[in-house]
Image (cartoon, rainbow, N blue to C red; front, side, top):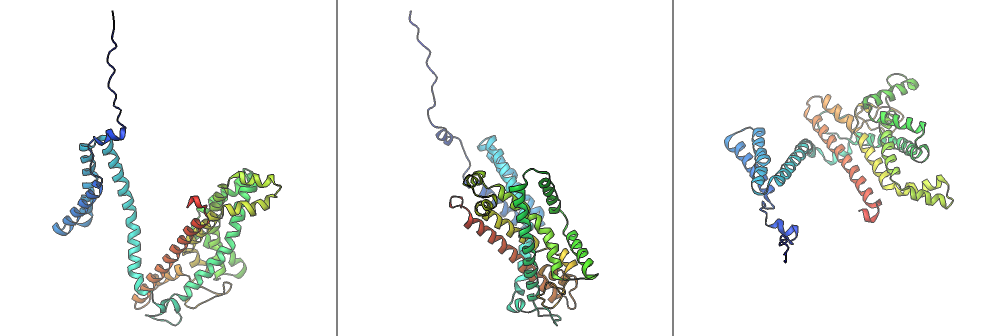
Length: 361
């Protein structure tokens, strides 16, 4: 008696990618189409019907956040619809975060660009009442004080980071230094200004105002940023490089100078540049320690100096009569300060690109 095996079930040998083609899908540009529809609906509600801008934007956003996932659920299924819903929510959060940034940039550019003339960059406010004058004295004050801050904070912060990574390890002193650096990172800028002012009052008496005091205040703010960024960069250097140098009999200090620092150079320069960009716009500590003046002062150790943040603040708070020229100069100084910070960030990006290995670019 012969028995025959039951027929084996048919196998679908087609690849998964080919099988997925038979599943209905929305067009590739469906998300862009939904966005265009939302913009058109928002414009129609705001311009045509006269609905307020915010409710019109919310109505247009509801079309995308509700309509697209519902349509995707009907055509593509539950999983794809949920993916589109999360994509819409994340994209909406990004757009919402960009609104203040774009608004600030637009406002500063609109009010500051008409002020940027050759006279604005080449004249100070000495003997100027009403229209005219410029930020020549404030630019030099910002450059000198920031340079003095970098001269003091960069070596201090870099040497501290080298000690923490190469010598301190997990010792008690290293842990204490890390704790103090973390505490200093979060102190308000006004506290740094009060500290520097109190320090200089001890030696020069009450009412002292000089550029070096502002540099000391900014050093208190900049040093912990340099320490943290430099420490992270030095920790990224592979230990194999250090061990290879030690195996050749190279002293530790020479290994640090010749191996560790060149390897981490891109990250170190980037962190220092971003730290400078962080303190260059501080106003409160400079207002306390340096003050404001209408004349150009190149001496950090004698008298008041003007800086771009304090110049902007003073022009807004004490505009004079008529106030329009002073307020316009404040917008121009704010735009110049913003451009300086942008250039510093661009320099940091370029340094990271050119100093990084070729396979990481």
